[in-house]
Image (cartoon, rainbow, N blue to C red; front, top):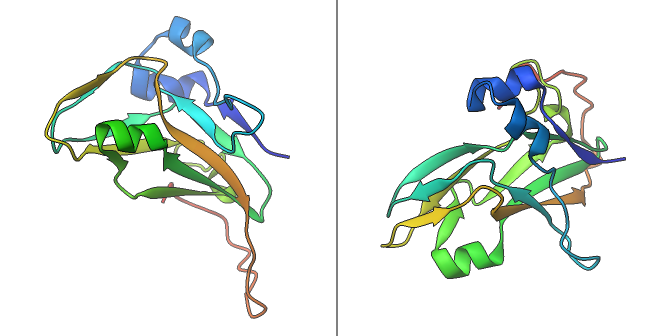
Length: 153
């Protein structure tokens, strides 16, 4: 089982203010076709990225999935090719125990950097990043840590 959820309204207000209309209306990530691996993550606000600028973007979403899975966040090909915009960490790794962590409910953020020499503006509803769920393996010598996540990093 895996899916996306909205963060609570209380968590939402920390980043977007008291905007119930936006909270009620914004979409969860979705695939554009049956052959698409990635779930498009939509911007909740208009953004502008100047050349060289880095911006941290709250998504309003969290995700749950199996303990042996990971959610990779990857810039859509068109975002990199057309605009030369990248995730600061290139590929974001969202672990299964990030979901509902005590510090921010597992709220997923994006950190984008404009590597071009032009300013680009994007509108609410645009999708620059996609999420891909992947099953992973562990080593034979792996130790079950039985620790709980206590922070968002």
